[in-house]
Length: 222
Image (cartoon, rainbow, N blue to C red; front, side, top):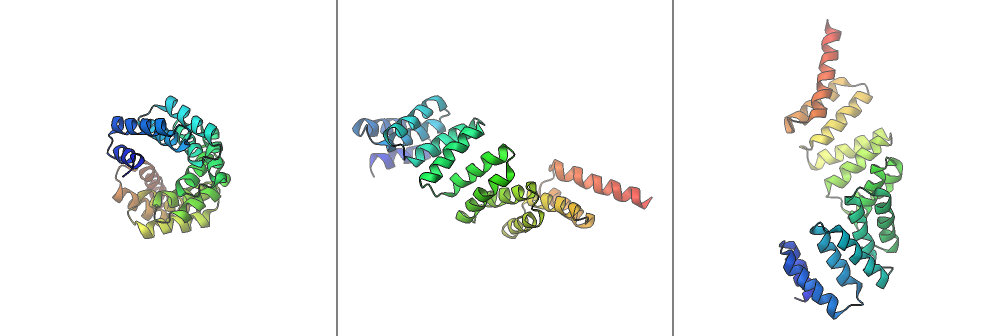
């Protein structure tokens, strides 16, 4: 196992000081190799040392402006700071350079979601779910963004896919309940809201929606 692999293993074990020593040695041995700076930047992100992490990622880009994972690291850094326009720029650059990974597409899509540009987010969230079809978070967020973009029937299909993989997904049930209300099917909506509450009793949105339906039904019956 080389030093880089050893350092990554130390990171996984949360032995950050040992990982830092190894990454530092790698940089000293190969000061013109951007990989060492990128890995050290990722370690610093794990340690919440964002100021130094940014410097390491930028140094990697000075050595190789085509270092996609350095842009990805900066994207993560700015995303965590809620600076979504700058994060968006770096995720886009990482993908344009050739980083064809689900996380990059997902996070790029989410930068648009946080800026309420839902339709712009859709192709990236769709691509993330294609690249990682077993990741229900990617699929769910794609469905949610379809709904926010008013593609209701497509969103319904995606939420049902989520439930096909995990029938205990309370938020998928909640959103299917909202869609059922939109389709003027209060009985189906009530069923989904109740199912969400059975799974997650503290689901406030489902509880409020259920109460509104039952109150309306009680008023109608009087």
